[in-house]
Image 1 (cartoon, rainbow, N blue to C red):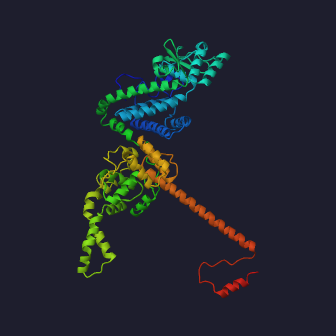
Image 2: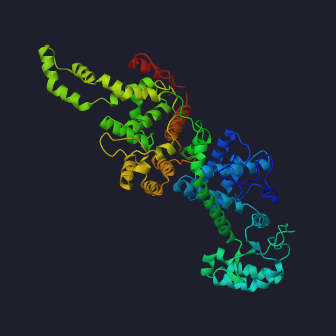
Length: 579
């Protein structure tokens, strides 16, 4: 299949392209060539989701302020887990295809393009840094990048000037390394690979490595006088070239995304019944399977929901809707669907769901008014006393059941797959909730239509909501900062840590995953507490037995049942006990 490109390209299939076969770094590419060939729909979806798992894990690690070394190690683990094929050719094939699939899926809007550009650049950076020095030099040559490692002779000639530039920039250790390498003549083994047609060097030098690049490629370094200029070439250090190659990658990818965006209309029209819906759904797909974190087994009842909310086991989005439903007795359409599917996913059966919503949607004020103004007169006319039983009868009878059945019961049964298409609808993912246009976050009475509070709440509203859940003050500040930065799922994970006091390492991709983590943590803590109490009781019994043995003689065990002993019986026991 052709990924929005009319020009003929090398086929990426069982064998790698000519670009891939030029070096030992088969899995790294600038993705300049759009692949063509055959790929099944199952592979198409699998490759895209696997790459998304890698990119989103990198994004989360970066947002958690992990160190560069830690992220570097994480990237290597992620690539082995999600992107490695049965052979180097298959690994390269999956890498190239998955990149171009996501390029196609994320080209449609500026926000999507910006996200993919940032994450792909990070992935490329860490993969490039994982290459050895020799492989990096060969990569520049094979990709046609104008970055050439200087030869031994050039290094000897320019060592003094390079050291002077480094000293002027305050990089004295690097300047000292350049000077010492030049003096001892430790420059053998690394040739100018860029000019020698890509031939591998005999060995990697231990001296500092510098690259010649066109001066217009590094205007910021030239302007700040941080590089040596000579004959239109800038001499940049090995650490500075990382930003150069990543910048070149970003420029290439940005241009490709813009080209794909222009061609998206034609592609979506041509593939309207096949690929377009799949590609269109990828940005909103959850990268974790439905069984990623299982909800604790066992049904719950309508009567338990209030306790679960009070126990802070619901995520903020669901707590908000529960509280609004309890106070206003109404949810709008999308809010009702979002909340119902969540309750279904955590184990609330249909019958209990209907009971719960019937109770919550019951209008309280008309019933109270009826009890105050009319109940006494009715009971008086019947010659009955005013008691709670009759009041309960009238309170229950006030609910217009036909109205509930007409306006709400059908929607609840539909979400449970018992009406309409009878489809087993799954819970909304966090991505879908975040992207849902709700028109405000439960702003007015009866106006709750779902959505993510971390997106829709103001900073003040978010602080107040988290404070009611007894979230740690320091964590609240971090949550507000993450929400302001549009990192809503990470904000939810931080809120979990602030509320429960336990780190949330696996991420939250569905509201039920928050609930499952909370219930699992509560269960573990209850088991630990029970074990500690049991151990304390056992220790106390052992100490009591040891004390009795130290006092000498056996004491008759106390009877658990039966009448209390008489004083005579007590004296008999005392008489039988040695003094």
